[in-house]
Amino acid sequence: MTSYKDTLTLGYDMDAWYGYGVKTPVTADISPIKNNHILCCGISESGKSYAEQSYLAKMILAQPSGEYWFADYKGDDTFDYLRGCPRYRSFKTTLEALDAVYNRLYARMSGEDKSRNPVTLIWDEYMANILALINEDKKLATATMNKVSEILLMGRSMNVRFICSVQRPDALAFPVGSRLNYGIVVVLGAYIRSVYDMVMPDHIEHIEGRVFERGEGAVLLQGTRLHFVKVPVVRNYERMQNLIKQALSQP
Image (cartoon, rainbow, N blue to C red; front, side, top):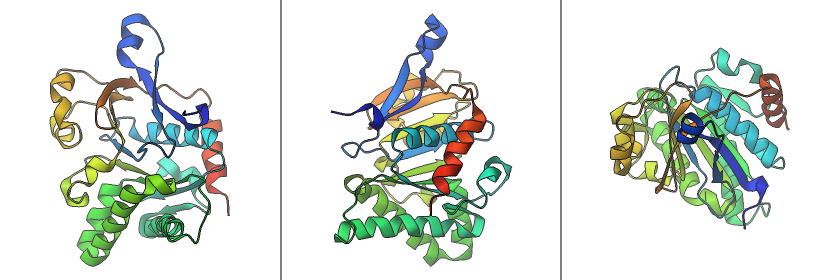
């Protein structure tokens, strides 16, 4: 059975929230028995970065023995508080975070590393990062996407998790079929049909016509279970940031 420590709250059920004033958690299993790679989509001002930090902090609380890496391509003020953390990389150094996690996966697959504590890579603005790599070095871009694909395919059994944050998950940065390798898909903010067509095509009829404010949207679990969620405001934002900072400050 899945224990509390292997459960991630993604938000509150929107219909229960607005219809009855009830806070009903929408949760996901983040134990190795489930595909818990996360794809989080949302345009600017959608609340995506806020949710991203909230999910990471909750994972750290649930799985404190985990190893966490953060790749922040834009390197803007949003994650400025993480600068200097040993497991934080930005702009031109994001591939160092990928290599660290990929090497852990390879070591576990080869039997060199017998540990199975959770290893998580969260990559903010992955799409923009890949597009930049394609313009600079197509071979490097292809190698990078191949490493990500291998983590998505082989990570679950090795307890290695990938959290991908993008505005739009366009096919150029997602090799054929790779968007299907995320067990948890979150789309936040204003309804944009093309984004849902990419990640939740079989559920459009249930989503179309919905109105989502910042921090609200749809969640698809394991490709079948659709939920509408509202990401709650974190009461102690400073504590959340400190939790993430401490996790990324491990040697």
